[in-house]
Length: 433
Ligand code: PHE
Image (cartoon, rainbow, N blue to C red; front, side, top):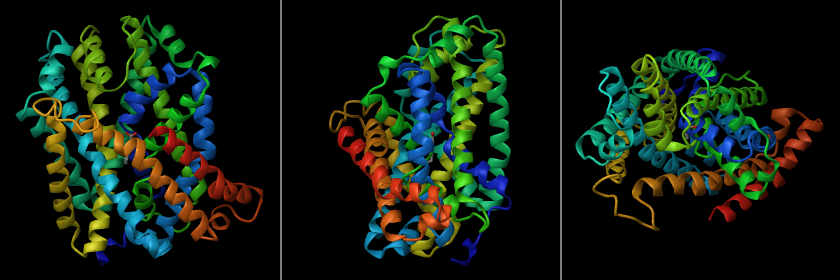
C-alpha cells in the first residue's frame, strides 16, 4: 500500500518511539529485582557488558534491515533471503502472542488506576488482587479495553498516532518516574534499598546469572520479533545506526535503574521481602503506598506511569503486526488494525481467565498465561534473534561495512555477528529448554 511510505518527522521522535517500545514492564517490575537478587553491582556490570557487546549486534541488524528495505518484517526478511521468509513469519507470530499476556497486565493496571483515582482502596491487597484477577467479567473487559486503547494509536497512523503518543507519554513517564524516585530517596529505607540493588555479591557470578541477564536484555530491548526492524523502517536515511542503538540501550538501562531507585527504598522502609512481577506491582507496592502520606496520589502516579510504559510498548507490538498485515495482504491500515485487534482479543480472553476459571487448564504444567510468557520470552525471542543474526551475518555481506566501515570496529562487529553471538544464543536456547 502506497500509504505506508512514511518516516518519523524527527530524530527525536524516532528515539522516543524506540525507547517507548523498549521501556515497559520489563524495566519496572523485573529488572530491579533481578539485579538485586543476582549480585547487585556485579549483575549490573555483567548486564552492561552483555548489552553493549552482544545485544547491540541484533539490535543494529534489525535497524539496518528495516532502514534498508523500508518494509515490514516478513517482506524485509524475504528480501534478505527468500528461502527464509518463514523467519519473518515466526517473528510476527511472536509479536502477536506477546500482547496476549502483556495486555492482561495492562487491564490490571487500568483497574488499579481506577481504585486509586476513586480512593477505593481495599484493606488487604493480597486478598484483593487474587479475588479480582480470578473474576470473569471485569478483568476480561479491562484487558480488551487496554487492547482497544493501544490499537487506537496505530489505527491513526505512524505520525498522527504512534509518534504523537510517544512524544507525549514518554516525557510524562520520565517526569513521573524521576519524581517518585526522588521521593523514595527521602524515605527511611533508602539506604537499605540501594544496598539491596547495588551491593556487589561476587558469589552470584555464574552461568545462570549470565543467562538471566541475556534473557532480560533481549526482552527489554524488544529484540527478536521485528519491532525494532519495523520502527527502523521509518527511519531517515541519514540516521546513524550504531549511535541510535547505543542511545536506546543507554536510555533503557538508565530507566530500569531509576525504577529500582523508585521501588526499593519503599520496600525496605516497610521491611517487606523484595519480589518481582505481579506480586510486587499489584500486591506489595500498593499495600505500602496505602500507608504513605498522600497514598492515593502516590499510587495513582505509580500506576499511571506503569500504564504509559506498557501502552507505548504495546503500540510497538501492534504496529509490527499491523505493518505486516498491510504489506502481505494488501489491505488498508484501518482494516489491518481491526483484524489484529480481533485476533489478539480472542487469544487474550482465555489468557486473562487463566487466573480464574481456567486456572487448572494447564499444558506442560503451565497456565495459558504462563505458557504464552514462557514460550515467547524463553524460546521464540532467543531463537528468532539467532536467525536474524545468522541471516544478517551470512546473507548481507556488506552489513558490517555499511554500519561501521572497514576498520577495526567493523571487523570486531563482523566476528561477533557471524560467530560469537550465534554461539551464545544457541547456548541460551539449549540451557533455557
Ligand atoms: N520491551 C518491553 C518491556 O520491557 C516489552 C516488549 C516486548 C515490547 C516486545 C515490544 C515488543 O516491557
